[in-house]
Image 1 (cartoon, rainbow, N blue to C red):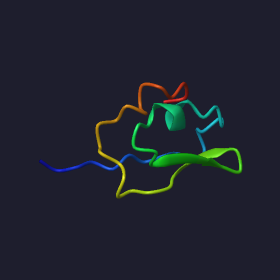
Image 2 (image 1 turned 180 degrees about the vertical axis):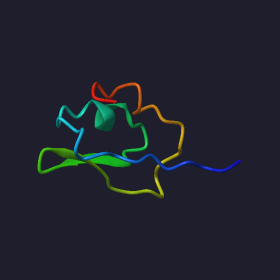
Image 3 (image 1 turned 135 degrees about the horizontal axis):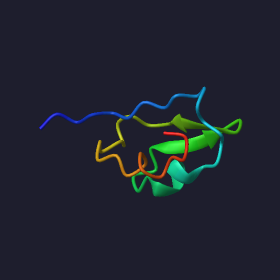
Image 4 (image 1 turned 120 degrees about the vertical axis):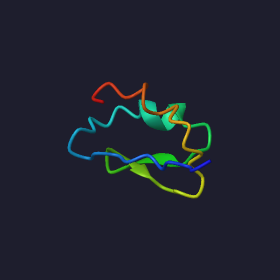
Length: 56
């Protein structure tokens, strides 16, 4: 199984933080009002963060 690391489009990010809250692995965090992938090695690739994002 190939693990797919999520990509965050900072242009679309409105800084709501819902993706960071949905990430059970704590791979996503908020920096300067934008979501950032802090640890790609923590990302399990399941994508729990994706449906939480209101901007897609």
